[in-house]
Amino acid sequence: MSPRARGRPHKFGRPGRVLALTLPEDAVESLRQIHADPAWAIVTLTEKAAGQKPPAARPRPLIELAELSPRLSLIVVDPASFRNLPGIAVIRMSPTAAFLAFDGAGGIANLEVAIGDRLAEPHLRPREREHLEQALQEVRGWRRSRNLKVSTRSIVVVESRRRARKRVSSGD
Image 1 (spheres, rainbow, N blue to C red):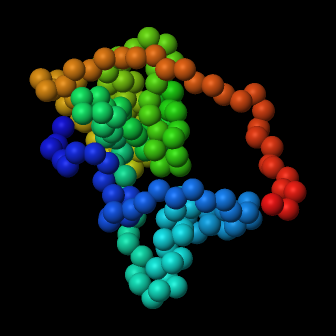
Image 2: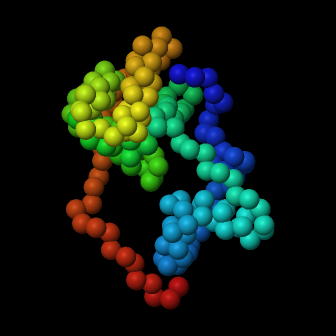
Image 3: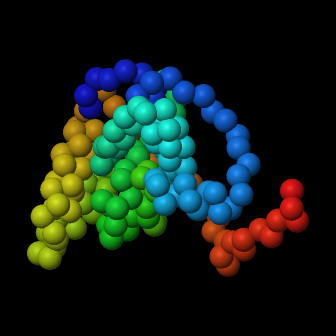
């Protein structure tokens, strides 16, 4: 694990503030046409209107330890790079971030084996193979690290049985 600053990095490369906004559904959909993350879309639009060059979105690592507390981290992955791992569920938190959960009992060694098994498949695209090889090295490093203790916890996932219906506005 490489040393890095504590806590989550700034989303836009500079300090930010959390805002709660209520926007019409069509405005949200328009923002998502600009960027999957509406916050990035808003920043892009405001900087464009001010004649500034928008900051480049820092690419999220394929796999990383996201600190939950000073001693507790969660493995966070790029969901597109971790499809079809045997016995591993990818739980999306956003379009670009997910955490991993085992379909049954498992641990970090099982994750390492699942990635290795996927790498053994002959039909992988070169980019997918590169991503999985990078992830395998990271996971192996975490497993072997004397500075990390890896434990497995169960999670509860609640899934809707039907698709969410669009809300009909009464003209708020």
